[in-house]
Image 1: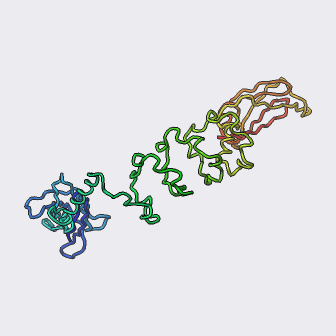
Image 2: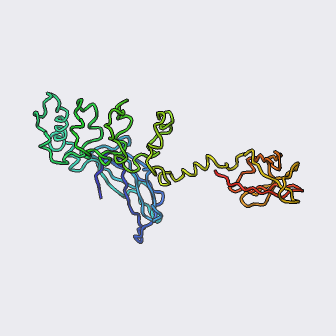
Image 3: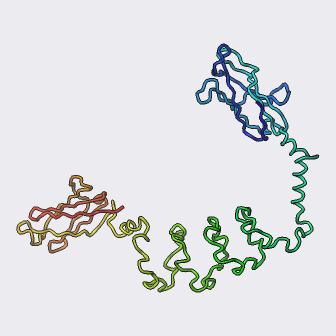
Length: 363
């Protein structure tokens, strides 16, 4: 079976090898494929590299991949035959077996398109000439040949206009004004993603004087139209707001609630104010009382500190403990003392009650 392809195509030609005695599909051994052009006696391609034997582990199912590029000798309007130049099947030679055929741009349609005397080839050339000549005399359409009344509703939609076909350079000044656009004609659904970006807006094109009073309010902004992903890093800073621009009166009741906070907003706050995991922390103060009455401040002690990290056994702390006064002592924890999610400290001395302190860290 022969099929027609375009020059430059990658072609896959399957063929089956069978044992001569039984007719059962059998693996090709040491196969070599050559390609001949038309009736030439010498192959234009020898030992095709794209030969796969027993594809998918199926015995006798073979595939030849041919890349029909001109640099390999392939030409338009030619026929090609694939021939086994070497190989055996069940120990029997299969040399000179034809395994496939194809042609390049030789079908009736392809020949008609390539014909420069008549047929599609002439039509193609004449069409190209007409397109190239449409602006020669500057008058292609009579005045008012195309008016709004002659165009059916929705006849021109975005899918009928090529990307970049209409640009600022294509429109005369004031071609499109507010008066020419009906109310709500342009909404979010009419604009492609990223249709309006920094590159489409001239410097100073949008200023507060360009908006009527009340033109932009909460009702004019779709839900989730403005989110953090719409702002580049550093877009909103304190310097961008005039003094007093945002006060209690400018924020509607319940404008900021749990639903208005990103999922990790609370975690961000916790990380900002909480005790950091595996980070040194100084000035942790605790009280030691005398074991004799369990109330009176224990002063002048040598305090031993231990830690239990994430419910593990207590081990000695790495940080230092110093006395402040009146039974108050200060512990400066090293990073190793806080290397966990839940840390319990025990401070002890011979004449005082043990003091326990538990800290939950954040990452």
